[in-house]
Length: 195
Image 1 (cartoon, rainbow, N blue to C red):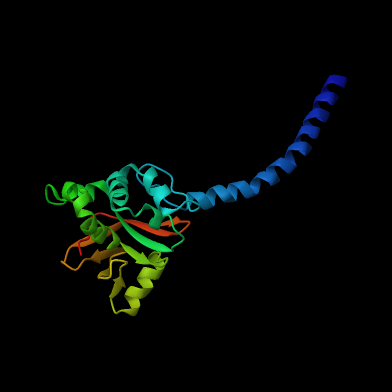
Image 2 (cartoon, helix red, strand yellow; image 1 turned 180 degrees about the vertical axis):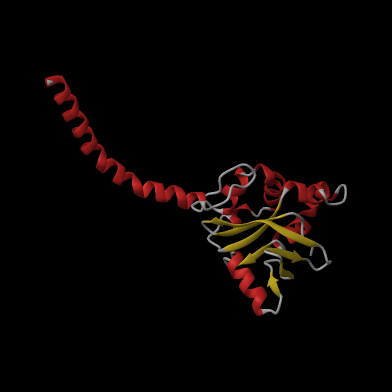
């Protein structure tokens, strides 16, 4: 009897002691949910507390883009405060370019051309999909986005998604939207846009 009473007392004490721990962990559960709101990209978690470059480096689907950004000398710019909206082509998007295009652009003597292509994928400001869709609606079905390169991309809503059309008529589809960064937002696209 004494052993049963001691056991019950021990369980009661442990339950009482554990209750504050459960409440103390509740904010962490909410924090985990907030982190989970950012999608995985290239098999890696994307953190809203990291900048565009730090997150892009983690994505196995963006190694070509990262190499191109390094070759163009744009790392410091994209680590800056921004905010920037980056339409980030995947490795598959770069691989779909005509043979030799990527290799040619990565040559030191083509740095200006590479910079032009890369900055054509960047818009000043923090345009998440809600903001892009609002601009598209205000524009009667399309929105002209002025890129850092100086030319425009045309955004349109197709179904529930967003497409971008470049100055040559090429179209890219946003495949992963709203990847929040400490200095802006990334939207993954399935084609390289050409100025």
